[in-house]
Length: 84
Image (cartoon, rainbow, N blue to C red):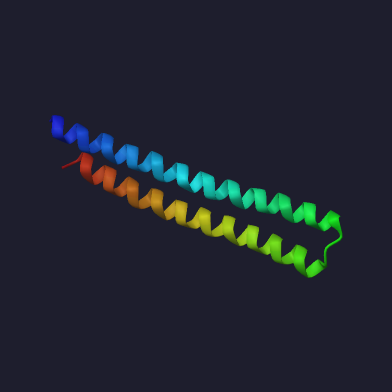
């Protein structure tokens, strides 16, 4: 039973660390979106503003999709480990 608990804790720690990485990447995307607003007020071209904003939105969308997939897979592995 001790080995089972250790694997369960290890999987939970893995999920926590992975989630922290996705939060950091999402925060970078939010910072980039704030930067897009800032460069707009600096008087840069509309193309540059749109490029920075598009990059921020794409980065956040990809991060959210991958985070969802990561949580689904990790949860499945955790459930599978729990019932073994």
